[in-house]
Image (cartoon, rainbow, N blue to C red):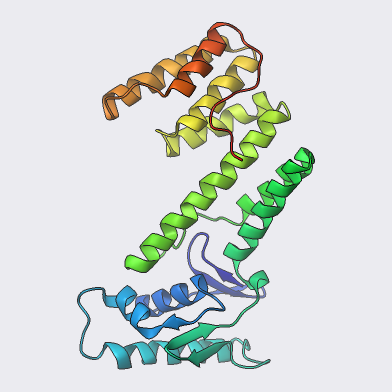
Length: 258
């Protein structure tokens, strides 16, 4: 199993392996991120050295590829044929989606979304929580990334937030307001300017009979946005605030994920 949703890891059975050399880890990460597609050697060189490419970049990259192939051999991963194949203009890592945590995550989120669309919301929440459980920290957290992997990790974090919002939205729809309050507070500490999360917390507090706390949460957000950004909360969030003031029982209307 290749893991990118947290520290970069390669697992075999119950044992975890991580290449010691930093640049070998980078090469592995970019190959896994583009699994079953050809990764040009020029792209690998750009990731490793960006605008400081040594004259030996080409041969050094080939050395890193050799080290990965040797690791795969030692782990018995080439028993059905080499999984790291040379294919012009570079290399391709040939592994099934079920061996890559990112692909598994994406599949579970798609499944959860489809379940919501067909009205099977409780099952969707279970599936989406399984997707979230694949994360063990920030993507590729045990390495410094070059330009290509920096862009990729940013994309993964967006996928993580989208899945989180989808699951919270489903739980709100099921009426799990009280159960979500502690989690929403924790998420807001991590994503302090995410208005959608603030809206869910304000709504969850209100619907749990804690209107005073809901109004205080809105005031704290308004102060934060004024201080940090010089902005007022969005019109949609102001509407959520008005719903609390009016004890409006209609569903929250702010930025519901599709």
